[in-house]
Amino acid sequence: MIRITCFIAALGCLLSTQTIQASELYTITDLGAGSSVLGINKSGEVLANNSAGLPFLYLAGHEEVLPQPSGGVFAAMALNDLRQVVGYVNYDGELNYDLAIYSDGKLTVMKNLSGLYPIAINDAGQIAGDTVFNSGAFFYSNGVVTPIGTPPGYEGEPSVVGMNSSGEVVGFIDLSTGGQQGFSYSNGHVRPVVPPGGVSSTVGAINDSGEIVGVYYPSSTSYLGGNLFIDSRFGSKTLGLALNMPSEDEEDLPSAINNAGDIVGNAQTTVTEAAWVYHPGKGFSNLNNDIAPNSGWSLFQAIGINGRGEIVGNGTLNGEQHGFLLTPECRK
Image 1: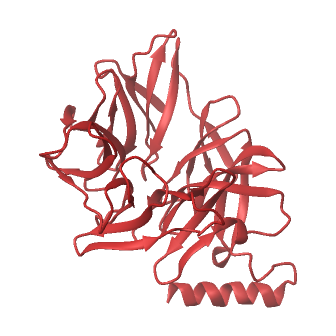
Image 2: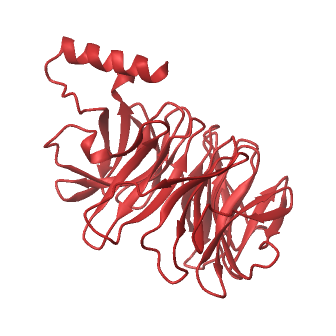
């Protein structure tokens, strides 16, 4: 029903204004020259860094630069649906990596929690990420930092890539024997995310339904020729290559999956790179084909997608890097 409504709305726009092409599925918002996007929440608020490397929040044309601590630098990493931003602070050039949270106009630095590189924060205030000084991963909840280990039989260094509203954490392990293995962590237990085929695998993101998107590879020594897959309580499903780019060395990197199962990421070869979106039942689409032609934009990286279908990422505008926000035409 949602997709039919979107089609009707887009058709209405096409009939009422002759300026919209049939292939223009998204309106693009420029987040500024030199900006770099980090994520988006359910309200459409975007977390990004500006050209000076300072983090800011963007919503509906309003930009809020986040405060910096006296004598230190706050590096923002992730955003939840409550407008809370997690990151870390380093003081006077020292690499302490003190955990820090921005909320309600205030930056709180937790100097008792150092050596942490946060990757995700959910609305319960749970945080997951990597440990800086011992090549591990962590889960933070209610003031307690818990190390995330590896599944039985797997040896290597775990890295976190995401977490959902229930506190289920996903990531991958750089195996000591070579290659990678995706994993899921929940309630103190770690399990391997086993893809439907391949020798090596990695994980990109998880949604609130527990659906995990990743890539599996035919070899433990190469990240080329991998197939995207979804892992859920119903089993695993292979999605294949995102764009089938004109090269045999396409590498697909999924970044986010929303609760409708829509996935975004980027595909790259030795000569080119492009942002893509996947919709269940419709397949993959190169986002460069879903915006106005001859716009000067080249979208090379899709970072996040929310439940409204808004997509954020990074690209170039007339050859210069810019962050972007894509809004579906049916929401105009």
